[in-house]
Image 1 (cartoon, helix red, strand yellow):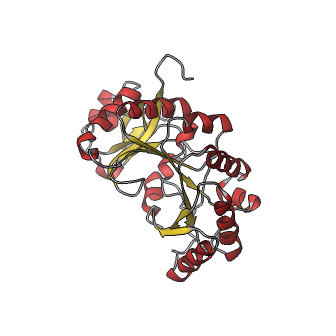
Image 2 (tube, one colour):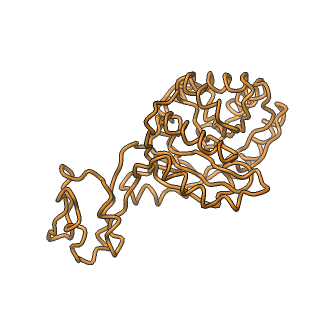
Image 3 (cartoon, one colour):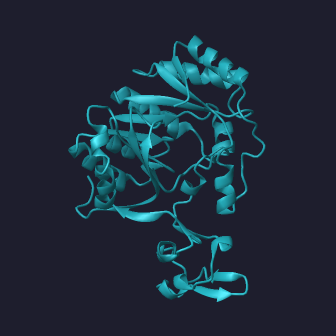
Length: 306
């Protein structure tokens, strides 16, 4: 059980009016930090668990307000604009809050359970009479289990539907603990071959498959999803293995196919990171249709998109 002291958590976004993160209208809470590093990740700001401040020199108007406000005196005016001393900066976000030109941007911040719940409660009128609710995504929410559990319990007290969007890479104890409070798991199956899985995500898939089996056998509600990545997991052998494994899980009868696109490229550029999906072409309709057909042949109901 969680400690009596309320934990805080690191988030990088709260998205309102989400329509593809579970049933009906959702608020999606994005946790920061993920044990995987998928080549096609669409949320690169969620991979690293630490806080970060981006400085955007082109927006700086030279007013100096951020330097005056910085509690750590980490900012100073230089020939190339405002300079940040990384040895002093604690990514507290003060500069991002005070800058009138939006020349600083916080990537992630610490939130208390009550702060997040205050944001969720603003949306309660939109959930009335629907299965709408809250989805915890990331990053990887299971990487912050105490904070996630407290959030799930708090949402349960409000009668909200609770979904957890996960890669499944966590201890079995964490999965059992979270499953007691979750109404739905959105669970990605990225690759069935352990060697290939490690090459494209950085981790083996044994723990992921074991946790998925655990959830299914416990009676948890699961929506499986297959991110379809050209040249990585869209071959007939992997699709067939994915379908057969999915169909063997008790209570699992459908799967979402998520075609790959490179819409996240601009996020990597903004973070100053190379885009690892540069070599991956967009999914073509023929490959998507082939995947759908192969999965249907395994007895699964298939939906394109999530």
